[in-house]
Length: 210
Image (tube, rainbow, N blue to C red):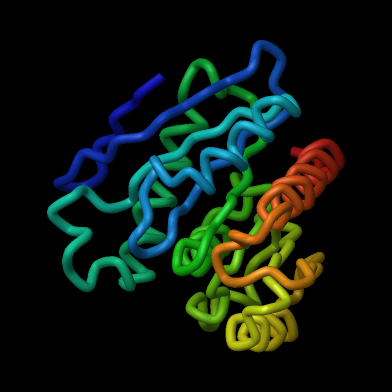
């Protein structure tokens, strides 16, 4: 189902899907140059749905903002993510569901900043080929269990993730997908990402109180 979320002076478009019996919700934060129509994120979202997790894929930037430097404005993206999370928690079909974030590339940085701002609403975070370093000082304030997934053939991003992991004080883990590049385009690589993310969400959303 397509939804429209008004945030400040813009209206953001998203796609929400809630299984008949849902055990939690995953909000996707896309990276720069991507959108809610990304086949990679939709592949991951489909696996989440099959596992009983609701999903919301939403564009944090309308089309007119995607062509400028807003794509790397982490504070702006995080602020919008916070508002979207609050609106999701209020929706009838998502009422009572624990919310988590799946962030990719720059979207992972924004997801971690948002998670640090609203720890009572965000119960788990997964980063796919993300830039957690862009979260800066917020890394040390994240309370949600966080999984960083990086491709073994993506050395620059792997190093950034290793350094970010050392700054985090929450429950955390780093998983490396052998031979995978930044976009996980190699055979079986994206499936591995989806399975790692699913298992993390199912475990953490089931075990966290509140």
